[in-house]
Image (cartoon, rainbow, N blue to C red):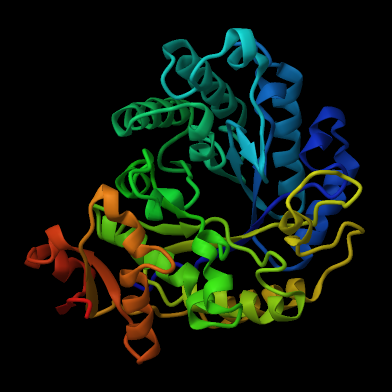
Length: 408
């Protein structure tokens, strides 16, 4: 049986007003944005409401805000798009959104406070109940890159594990497991950050799929190697293979859930080629669930105080015009659908030896990262295998690995 064709979609950033548009949700504006996305031949969107608007008090979930989210999912269905809903935002594009009941005089650690965890769990249960019967719902994700909130909410690895387990259970309570995914996401400090409390094991073993967000600015990857370098063009491929190494189930899918072409890291002239190479290289990984580009629309420069790169990440500009990267992405998706990649198993694997305190060896600039990239450029298709699994013949056979190579 052939592997399913990977899914290709986009993270939806509303053109008018960015996510502040939830304050005065306009269905016609959303319908226009979603129609533009669908015209590119993409099959899904990932959507985000704002936590303070959904749950302004610990025991109050606003019905109106939930209804807006359901309406957006229905509008996506009109456009022929499936939807993943992120629940707790949380963090978006360098801004954090906390309800007031977690801040100032009422400060609660969102990862460790028992009542704060239960409030988030109740929000996810509520969203699940509201969305469970929508045929275009892919599933629920706990929130966008929740580990960005660690700076203001100190937490241990064990506390993160408890938090994720509790919320994943809550998110799945109202969703038929056979029909929907329940998952979580982290920015890539989870993979590359020494002693970061969100771990690769949590990303690769909790929830239904592993999500990776391989950004070219992490570890100064694009500046270190250059925007046209193999290290940049294969970053999503590498992130997918790294994630597979930490999974207990060799068949667990990996979702490249965020990747994009931020200026100046990827100059606009290089963005179409970057998009094409990123999709083609990721599609060479067995078990790829899909790729979801960040993002649909540029942030309007009328909005202040964003990092420069946030204004340039869209497939469409702030006026709604498709950028050259949009056509490159659409054409590549059409090719991959017309002739789905076979992505055979990777028979050679590069041995990864690291501890929680030396995770950075596998990030851009690290010796393991550079060794893997050298192998790839020499014509090999290396997998990644953890040292503790390198002698497990059954596990290696399940992954199709015939040779384990030590980095030079």
